[in-house]
Image 1 (spheres, rainbow, N blue to C red):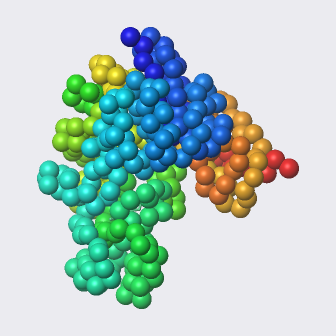
Image 2: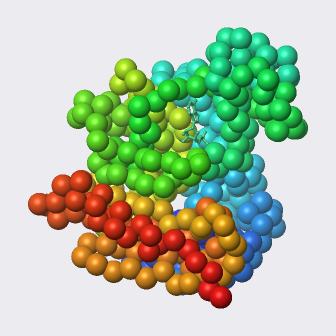
Image 3: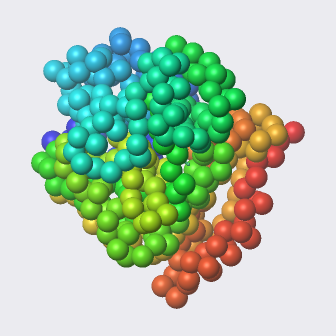
Length: 381
Ligand code: AMP
């Protein structure tokens, strides 16, 4: 029986989930997204849209009444509201899983309880506790908002005693945690899937390069020894088995100087570092997510071609309508998200450069660097 899919959030992730859903009409007959921006990316590729805030209780109820199954592309939803509509639609990942993940302190505590390695951290409830925490961890350390932070916007790196007050004031009124700074060798991630029946699959480890806390480039596979990839994939597998949520999850990790793997953060949704799977892998992360939440057998996760994903971010120096970005070439795949307005560092699209079997990663880097300047955003007028 074909189902109606509701998605909370209709940005680029909701867009690419919608596109994958459109390819399986025998399983999904209609897609409805809830998003505050009129004509959001997902609505441009065939999803119906309810225009409302992500946390609008009535709108979520309305979405649940119209849907058989609900999923989300953002982790900041209200898990209690989602829980209250569970009698109307199946929700995956479950509100219980979301509740653990969306609070970084609860998430790390949960991982630690399950013996999954994470950086050292403590809860911060007062300025005094922050001072005590810094005595324990030393400088630098990261003060983090527990909730509603993304693209690094909820972090303050405290380098010295003179910054402590400023860091504390920066987060006025928010729930906080402090984390020991990890001088990592590399940032990596695993895209992992678990279906409603408990089947788990993990994609090969990829390497992530950030600029100003925003993902810029993903290299698949990560340039590490096989033993490290194996260790990270095993940790991702264990994480999925204890978390019990159904869907695709992005598990971000650090490789430490002594080749340990620590989980930095889990996203209970398809993830930017999995966009390469659209052209590089047996099954894209978006189809995989649908398979997982529909309880279908998960698709293969083999990396068929090495790939580099490059995010197209709005230029830093302007905001407004931008000239269309056009790029084509052998094994170059451009995906724009249909956002009319460029803003500094806003994610506007991505580029996947995929290798032929005879290509080396170096060849892919060369290809990417020859086109990087063509994806700068420039004003339309
Ligand atoms: P987050 O928003 O917590 O995922 O952090 C954003 C970025 O901050 C990460 O991708 C890392 O580059 C950096 N970061 C976060 N936590 C730590 C840490 N404990 N040690 C070093 N860098 C960190």
